[in-house]
Image (tube, rainbow, N blue to C red; front, side):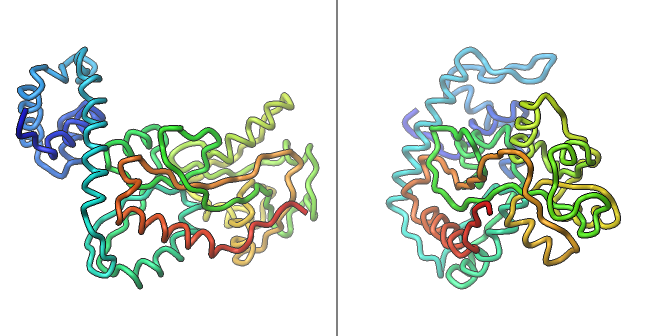
Length: 308
């Protein structure tokens, strides 16, 4: 094990995450035979089968999780040292970054980030992906994700973070809604049909609202579950639909569509968005540059408006 191939160790983490050689090959950008060859080399390196075939697919060997944890720690140390030694010149860099952000945060932060990035680092590539909530931590740990932008009421303590912005949840309805005029009662909120963005799953905003309603022993009338926020205001025109969205987004939507913004008749927590990253990226110059750009973009937003 004197001459360890770092790329091989990274492949090991992807193989352990996917538990499928073909899928791992796709993520690694290599052929399926190359991924199979990498697994064979890893089995020799660790003197262990690592991944075993079963009717349910490939399953880890008894010792594989211990190897996986050790490799994570080794790569975190290696990447940290590499980050210290590697200079980063934004004007010349061709580095690629992968960021995970929900549609709402992307809508707020990307315009400012794009302007700054194009001015400072015209050759840098930034890919913004749809959040994968179930695998976000794993993707950060394996280096397949650089930053996660999210509202996490209970964030993992294993990640570094920085606060980006706050917001609050409001209700929106068509300006000519048949029964709602300037305010909405609790009974109206509970009985009127709701439209909700679903995306890749229930949003944190949706979960918080559902929990508040469940404490009352009630359920929302969820009439439409759609893929993105932008569809909702179009659906509201000429209907009795209502929706709950962050205030910053509601303000943008109201400028584009005939909507009214209403205070929800429930006590709901503030929205607190932050950026999260793995310890291995903490001192990386390029990563620090990206975090700085993201923070600048967040600070350029209109001031947070408290209730009232």
